[in-house]
Image 1: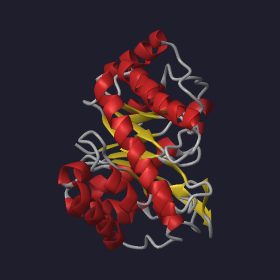
Image 2: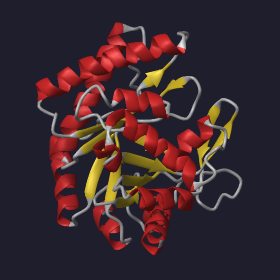
Image 3: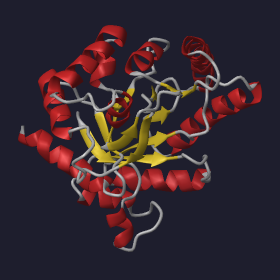
Image 4: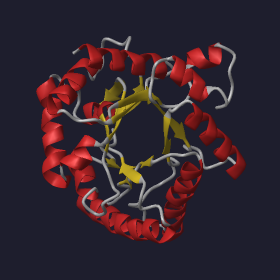
Length: 281
C-alpha cells in the first residue's frame, strides 16, 4: 500500500508549540498522512527506553516509521577506522529503528574523495557486501535497508549505481531521492516518462518487487553545476522536480512506494499535497 509522510517535524508542528517527537505520530495522523521518517543524521543519540516510547506512540496511531542513518557514513573511504564506524552507524540505526518499530532504514553510500568514480563505486560495492553479512549476523535481515541516490557529482549514488547495489542482498531496496536525481541531471526530470525511465532501470536491474516497495524522498531542490545546493518547498517555481509528473508515473506503473517529503520546513504540507494529488488522479 502506498504511503505518504514527512521527514522530521515541520515548521507548522513547532509553530503549534510542540517539541521533540512526543506528538509527532498524532500530528502526522491528524494531517491525514501514513508514515514518518526519523533522522539519526547527527548520530543515534536516544536511549533504548526513548526509542521504545516513540515506537509505542507511532504504533498507537498506526503510522509507519522509517529511520535515516547518520550522515557520516562513507563506504568509499580509504580510512579503515572510518569504514568500521560506517558499519557501526548503520547497525546502531537498525537497532534503534527496530525498537521504534521501523521496518526500513535509509543511508547515504559515500563520496568519491580523490578516487576515480569506478574505483570508488567498486569499493563501495565491496563494503556493502561486508555490511550485508553483518546485517545477517545481527539479525536485521528482515528489515528493508535502502542506499539512497545522491545529488552531487562528487557523491556515489546515481540511479544505476543504487539499482546495482540493491542486487547485493535481498534486503537492499532502492531509496530514490528525485530531488537529488533532478539536481544531478541538471533539471532534466520534465515529464512522467522521465520517471518511468527511472522505474524501468530499477526494475530491469533488481526486479519489480524492489521497485514496487522502494523508498522515495521527494522535494524541490536548488542546484548548481555540481549538483544539489539546498532543499526548497513546493512553493518554489524555479527548480524542480514537479511532484505531479512523478505521481502520474507511479499511478501508471501501479507501484506502492513509501514516499517521504523532505521539503524545507513544509514537509507535512507537501506530503499531504502529494497524497491528495495521487488520489485525485
